[in-house]
Length: 369
Image: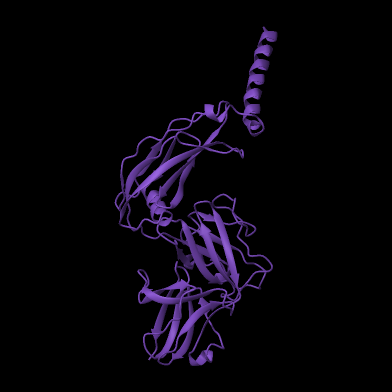
């Protein structure tokens, strides 16, 4: 009986090893002819209407199982197309993918270029591949088309807290907003030495938070890398390193938990106004971490004077135009990267205030007399 049981165990283990071997070595194994593959088939989709009242509702895409002729784990990738644009809706190891209407709205508006509060017919198709291999994927035998009614999603926001605030003042952590409703990508421009408590290259830790309190979710890591891999509520901080710049534009993507920091030595105004001596002298902007804005001035403008905002006292990166009124900042105008020269509404003395926690950044021109 014992000998028989050992044989059964050995046979079971051998069979399991054979299956595992097929899955692990499948990229080295000749699969059955592609002509014999069973490709997935997407089920039809109903039209999707999205507004502020139903944005948390879920939508499920379903499809039939693909087959590559051997027992493998299959990764499915679902894509949406509109005109000349294609966007990934999501991935799944099963025969379905569930998304919130808010997520679909964000993809439709921000990735496919459909206007908010508009309707458009989009198509979806599926790709299936052997997971964890470089083997090419197979496409679904069909596409499905459906109408999506979009809406203008409210921008979400997160916070940054660190030593630069005069010592981890979480109750006043600077707030910054999504680059667009539903993108889950956020940008902020800060001066990391503004609080006066940091020696360049030392003690530059910061965290990204979902609220102005340590009770919520927050993230940090022990090195500023292209991605973070730490769990929520980790103990380590993001760092800029020993060669840190003074000013950073930080981009946080909560979809794939990535963070990026572009460093600068200065942000300034330059133009034909007196203090700039006809485009020869920069007036540096100063970051106020308590108000979370950049200020410059007072600056005196005569009739016809114009100006731009530039980085590093150079022309590689500049902001201009400022003709579109901001929807969110009172008396503010959206700045355009690489935009044209700007003018004040009328001659006089101004304090310039730049909101670097929005995309695009916003300028407010405050007349002093």
